[in-house]
Amino acid sequence: MNDSTPATPAPAAPARRSDTTRRAILEAARERFAADGYERATIRAIAQQAKIDPSMVMRYYGNKEGLFAAAVAIDLKLPDPSSLPRDEAGRALVTHFLHQWEENEVLTALLRVGVTNDAGAERMRGIFNDQLLPLARRVCPDSEQAPARAALVSSQLLGLALTRYVLRFPPAAHLHPEEITAWLAPTVQHYLTAPHPGV
Image (cartoon, rainbow, N blue to C red):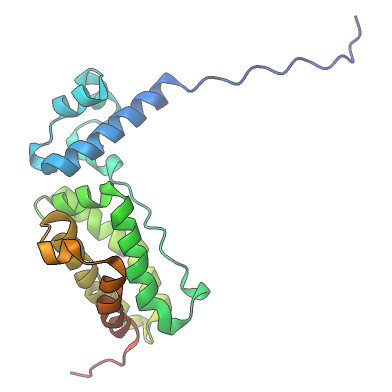
């Protein structure tokens, strides 16, 4: 037998059953949290939608709070401030957030829960601190003012999201994204880069 004969490659391992189960649980959880909110969504309903036993949800995520945290783990994929002109930051942020909200129902679920539940609010604060605040520090003229400026930007973006995607006020829900950007971008730009009012 020739020892130099190359070994036959091993077949690719199939996806682990646990990975498939986790994906099914998270997909069902996102749909239920978005549709029902945190309080009304139940482990039993999520398990039923995922077509698994409720004990499997508890096995992987411990409790509803743990499942919610995993289901709404979000990377906003914010634009790199170094890649755009400073005076375009407001428009870039509004355009990016609109795209995210239009395409990602997880954000709607998070907002619905965040206004009524401590776990959801804590998750939203984490996203603010870890993702939006560093961007504001890079753009604003004084890094010490970044937390206040980022909070004001959040008030605009989350206020829009609440009225457009959760409460669905007809005027807000029917506005074209380009029109929203034209209205909102100058305000967000002002919060990010205008001189401090000095009050």
